[in-house]
Image (cartoon, rainbow, N blue to C red; front, side, top):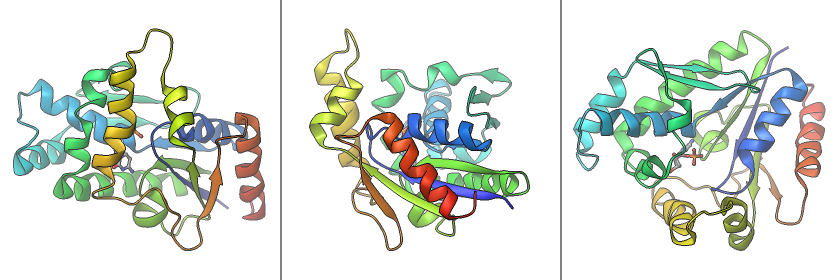
Length: 219
Ligand code: DC
């Protein structure tokens, strides 16, 4: 039996680290749906497309040649044969990616891409999928649906590494969430979604909580 574990949450909620670890422990694949929005933004920037032009951005996203490698120990995004994984989490992309994420037509295209990847994973062992609208829109039929939350303060601290500019971090965490929450709800759990407030929990505690839910669901 295969399993799909959907994990949503805002920036800094810990969902990437938790999702990858859960996937590793259960021998599942790992899909970072945020990466699909990020690679769309990168492609538009490279091709000189104005990110405010809804139709132009949608056309780019619909025709981009992207491959996602779903290994949780080594996830990769390949654009036109080039490994662009390391470019996707730079400030350049983090500060503009909401322009793609708030474009409803581009979202529809990327949602189909994400669903195809999830369906393919279902033919294998299954997948842990992280994002903002996985539990509610992309895979509401997932066997396990979790919303990770954390206080603003904790989320900012988690994203402020050594030398990071606090104003940039603030914009790329809170500013981005604010923009994104105009098109997708990820601060409150939909019906049947288990909310875990990670503010006072260690990574291991959150991973254990998700693993317990996965076992209950038959993983
Ligand atoms: O999780 P992340 O920071 O890599 O996400 C990148 C952007 O994409 C962010 O602005 C939120 C958006 N996003 C989304 O709207 N829906 C998803 N399922 C995943 C990400």
